[in-house]
Length: 193
Image (spheres, rainbow, N blue to C red):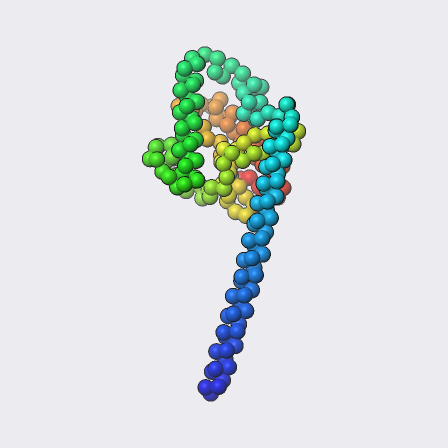
């Protein structure tokens, strides 16, 4: 009976060892696939950046939307107020980026709101300033890309308006819908929710 028990323990140990070995092989395979996907993504990013630098006509979607739909949006705003708003917006973007990169929460209301928004939606930070393109005329950086699942993503464009009205909301929705199209074009198989 002791010999049967020893034989059974040996078989169990061998099975556990094989399962562990199989698990390591699966993990190695997955790690290689992730590495290959990242390399492909980096190559696509480089191609988009080359396109952007080699084509005079390539423009960002924000500028296109502004020029076509809202060319007079800032006409009656004094230059010093526009400059102050630009500085404020840059600071907020930097604060949020520090949170994403270094887990540094500076305590600002904007960072707190961003954290709450991410948690409420289950968004996991993936990348900032992610370049997408139609490989012809448009090349834009998406402020934030969040991973929802292996092939599902959420996109965000950080807005730092003092107040949002219907016009600004429509502009943001249009911008994000174009980003969605370009993101899925740039990343075949990816879906934006």
